[in-house]
Image (cartoon, rainbow, N blue to C red):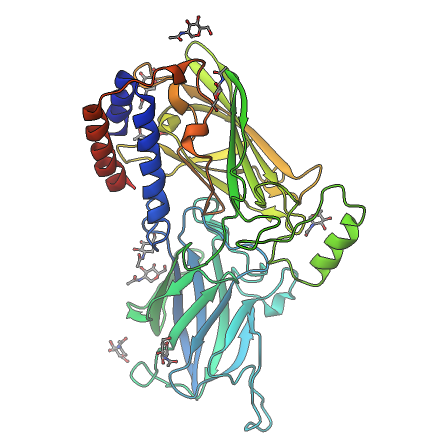
Length: 458
Ligand SMILES: *[C@@H]1O[C@H](CO)[C@@H](O)[C@H](O)[C@H]1NC(C)=O
Ligand SMILES: *[C@@H]1O[C@H](CO)[C@@H](O)[C@H](O)[C@H]1NC(C)=O
Ligand SMILES: *[C@@H]1O[C@H](CO)[C@@H](O)[C@H](O)[C@H]1NC(C)=O
Ligand SMILES: *[C@@H]1O[C@H](CO)[C@@H](O)[C@H](O)[C@H]1NC(C)=O
Ligand SMILES: *[C@@H]1O[C@H](CO)[C@@H](O)[C@H](O)[C@H]1NC(C)=O
Ligand SMILES: *[C@@H]1O[C@H](CO)[C@@H](O)[C@H](O)[C@H]1NC(C)=O
Ligand SMILES: *[C@@H]1O[C@H](CO)[C@@H](O)[C@H](O)[C@H]1NC(C)=O
Ligand SMILES: *[C@@H]1O[C@H](CO)[C@@H](O)[C@H](O)[C@H]1NC(C)=O
Ligand SMILES: *[C@@H]1O[C@H](CO)[C@@H](O)[C@H](O)[C@H]1NC(C)=O
């Protein structure tokens, strides 16, 4: 659909209407990003599975496993925190592979003191390097949870807990209520726990199957709107055919000196830079970004440069720059939408995966770093960037440098929508902007079809 639609744009060669179409595209994408539903990852969720492994005299032992089924949204340091409200007067006697952050009031207990007596416990992962006798499979990564698209084997996190004062069979046990998941900021909403068919465990040699006494599942979904974050990244553009470098929109992620969205920042050449940075990271305050003073004030900038034009191919260079002195981004990822991703021929030094491989519009790619090479985007400074080049094969019917076609439609960094420059500022092909004649009829019909097609697609 989008391909024929782009042909329509080409044949009409109307600059202004394309501008309006792009504005609608931006409108649709900013509209949908406020909902929990993410059009680029419609099934994305984190599922918490609670398996009761055995009954005990006053409760049970359970293994709680978290699966990050999201294609490109991961949880990085300082890691996830999970919470719930006990339905009765349960306590946690002991834990393996995780711990409650707060023991709470256990003064009623004599002799054997529980690990946690709180009605609403908060659980965190243990750190790497935990002694083996306190580990279980998939624990102890400091709460870091990779995305399913990047690496399913590290997109799972688990801990074991022994629960007391609970029911001791599948009729008297009560499922906890009000599950919460933070990363550790807000953004996730968890549904109610649902009792499901008991999980079957297959032994490592595949010759024996055991099953849980009882299992319940909780599904948590993410919404960028709920996380109430100001944008965290922006996009800048340039091309070989026009000297203009379109920088990130001013104040894309905040303004330096304004009352509306003020944000503090650090001058790149500040003589006290090192002490400011180490002071702030030591105080553990690495959630509020320590960004370099720029006009856009974003911690992350993604630059898209249309580099070369060959007979049958064209080449793009992508540079991701970190302006945050307080953060090394581990396992970062980028989601990029451009109609030519159906004909990506080669990608250098990033991993690539098509996010919409079976859809008719195969236009969205997920890109991430190569392990031990550039999967860590270092803090702001001389090493604070990663780069890649993409080689696309041209499709004679849709390919054009005209009217900003060569630029991406949208970009996400670590699952958050990046602020794009306004479409009318894109570098145009020389003298494309002189053809401003258009008919009102074409304009109206194109705007209407754009709304219908693009909003349905988004
Ligand atoms: C959660 O994600 C998994 C994997 O994509 C999917 O099978 C499941 O249906 C999703 N659950 C919900 C409630 O969306
Ligand atoms: C509870 O356990 C009994 C056997 O002890 C079983 O027949 C029943 O299906 C179980 N119910 C649930 C909800 O798992
Ligand atoms: C769960 O949360 C809802 C809404 O926040 C609240 O009304 C309810 O009382 C909570 N339930 C428990 C058991 O805490
Ligand atoms: C419960 O979660 C597990 C793990 O994600 C999944 O395999 C299972 O299908 C889920 N059960 C239901 C009924 O959704
Ligand atoms: C980033 O990583 C480097 C090298 O491992 C380290 O020296 C630096 O302190 C880290 N920065 C932050 C903010 O964690
Ligand atoms: C989508 O594009 C990718 C990258 O070119 C390709 O590997 C994949 O086969 C395409 N899928 C379809 C259905 O065209
Ligand atoms: C990819 O490019 C080739 C060569 O121009 C073209 O024949 C083919 O249709 C293109 N594929 C898609 C899915 O557009
Ligand atoms: C380059 O693009 C800008 C729009 O960003 C336009 O104003 C300018 O005229 C273009 N330069 C040339 C040489 O066409
Ligand atoms: C486009 O620019 C070229 C050289 O810059 C010029 O020769 C040509 O007349 C221009 N065409 C139009 C339609 O303005």
